[in-house]
Amino acid sequence: MLLDVLHVEPQKDYILVLEFENGERRRFDMAPYIDQKPWDRLKASNTFSSACVGFGTVVWSNNIDIDPETLYELSTPIS
Image 1 (cartoon, rainbow, N blue to C red):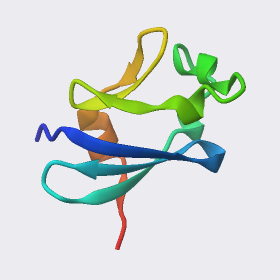
Image 2: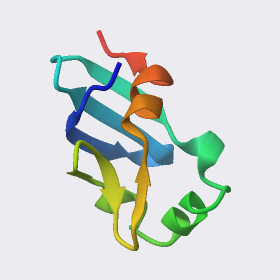
Image 3: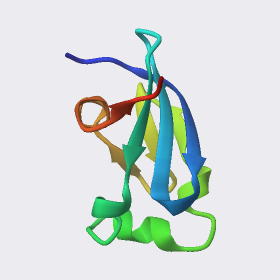
């Protein structure tokens, strides 16, 4: 299921709080990916916290993004 990300809130410890177009709020842990390319570049000071929404997913500068299906499928609902 392809759902666009409408809002992202970067948190400490490489956590993203996401709001999807279906109204769900979910938590995605980027820590398992942060040492892999291209996301390893997000460890630079304040780079991770610059996450924003672009084209229905989470994006950072330098053409770094993450697939919205991955964000939804591997995130956990926030109650």
